[in-house]
Length: 228
Image 1 (tube, rainbow, N blue to C red):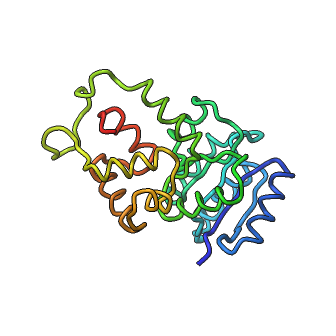
Image 2 (image 1 turned 90 degrees about the horizontal axis):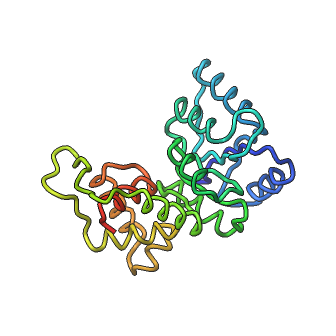
Image 3 (image 1 turned 30 degrees about the vertical axis):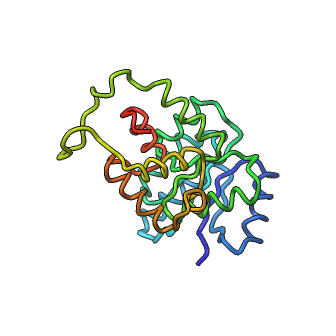
């Protein structure tokens, strides 16, 4: 089954190239294309008002948009349709922009210079509950989190019902390190010599232990707790 994609991109040339890419791909089905955040939000609000089903899987959102920017649009879309996975697709590599996008609810962050193979692999991973971060962005996120890590991780509140300090198994730490480097679930499985399903099992265990819902959140808590 094809992965259902929605695109929000104001640059007509880049938008056209992505439309062609998705139309020629056997992996994706391009449902809607919007040239602005306002058009996307208007469509969603109308669909909700009319109680029409919205079966979007992945929303590719440009950061720099006229009017409402992509980060604010991400916040608003998540309030209307929390189930959609929003992946920022942008030229920006600044740490502050990346962090703001993630805290706004973005599930992944890809650079526009990503090649077709990398884009396909990362979006496949996102559709399977991965959190796409290209290798460069992943390093930026990790460095940013480390620079803001408290010196005393003991100040953090433990998850309810968790006795003592949080711990990840050696294999869970290996999996998380691969994801931090921008590896997909498939790439992580290949690096560690395990199956993709086993990677997903470890990721679910990591999310449950750390009480998070994305790779970015998992990395943040793991760094603060000095688990990796």
